[in-house]
Image (cartoon, rainbow, N blue to C red; front, side):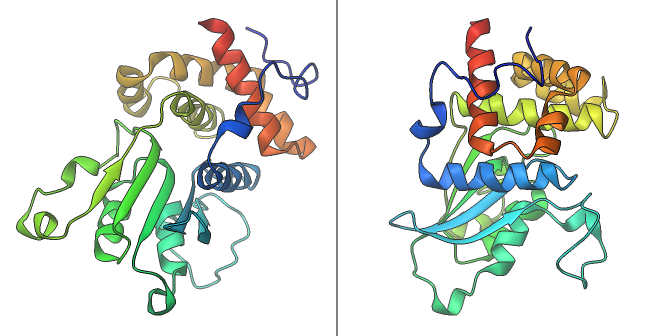
Length: 227
């Protein structure tokens, strides 16, 4: 598998990026910024019904320099929570959607339920911590009408592969329970993410300041070539 840092990353067969809806492009942009800042590549945005982006958020649990100096518990610095906390609900439209690159964890799922954002769209299933299956599990969760859409075919493998790459390269997770759970859902994405980590591909692109559109297009090309 060609995972070279130096050859062909700006030359792609198909411009997959241009086929993505603006909210997903914005989420991926935040995810790549998080990755380039040394944190998990997870991004989120909240949009109104016309898909205008109202607020953005990204994972920053491993980020060295934090904008919010009051944040002391880094384990809670998740993308979805950051977006929800940035929203001024008093001056926002009633129809809003939370978009995220990953299925929310229990904390972010609960925060979304407690907000006035009634719809959730996510790209990739998280077989380890994803908690959308909690919808309707209690009287309160059933009473609050919430809409959920996900995963997103095609884009899901890309997002999970990037996440696996970070976990293997930075967090040294080669064969732990997290990857095993993800492998049950998308084995190809897990193996591809491991290959990216071994080659240092994404790390090299981050250091070069490569744009997220080029990164996503090239990963999609390589995944497509395997099919």
